[in-house]
Image 1 (cartoon, rainbow, N blue to C red):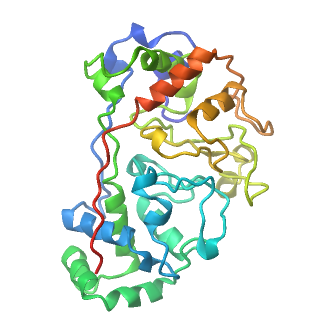
Image 2 (image 1 turned 90 degrees about the vertical axis):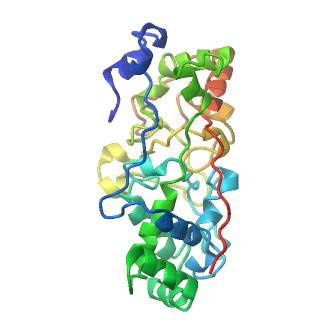
Image 3 (image 1 turned 90 degrees about the horizontal axis):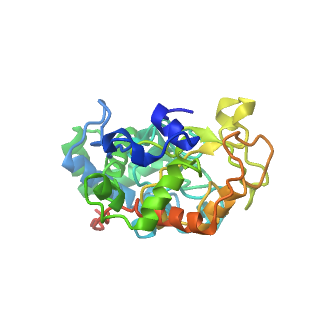
Length: 332
């Protein structure tokens, strides 16, 4: 159980209720974004990263961009159960949202990428995703004066390369942050920011429903990997998840805990998109998952009432932050 506080654990297993504690002991505000020492933030770098993020020339077909699968208008995902890659082929997993990804310890559902910089390079070259050759991409961008001048300004002369492309994209992605949700306003002292139903749902979330075991901290993730009992769907009849990286039997069928801020904006849910909406997600957890092999011991039937389920949905809605506004860039 990574990153779960003693208090959160106590709430989860039912020793205490939230109302018995000082506000700052149960609430973690979203902190300022930290940037790696080898990829410091600058406005010019962020703007360059935004151009690259929306540019379909990063794909071999010249029609897939990062934004194709991580669309701001679809919760920075794509609205599909499983994403569509090169050649219009359905892939095996749901496209995870970019929102708050700069806070995550690992990237991708199986955690195989350790940073946003590393993640940004992966889909570009993956034959089933953007299917682009790095050298060909560099040649394409180097004939565009608009890109050459921007790379020179941000990284220095002759610095248009795949590593700096990834650094720019990662810098832009770190700007996609969900903040100032009704949940934040509530803990800041505005008790009218959350409805009575949402407050009740918060107590169920950290109490009876045990959600806080894995969904904890400022962006509601423990950055861990768990087998929660999701049945296979789509082209992958078997998906071993984290096991493919760790080779630890405990990790068979385990996937990364997603953050929950702005969660209403990126349906469907689960690593393979099997749950259409938040109501379905809560029903899934209430019955203790579906696939029982190697199931996490945290996943057990909950016995929630109909009202508790409704209250949980209202609490999750209260995690939606201010609109993340982004203007489409004019590409070179």
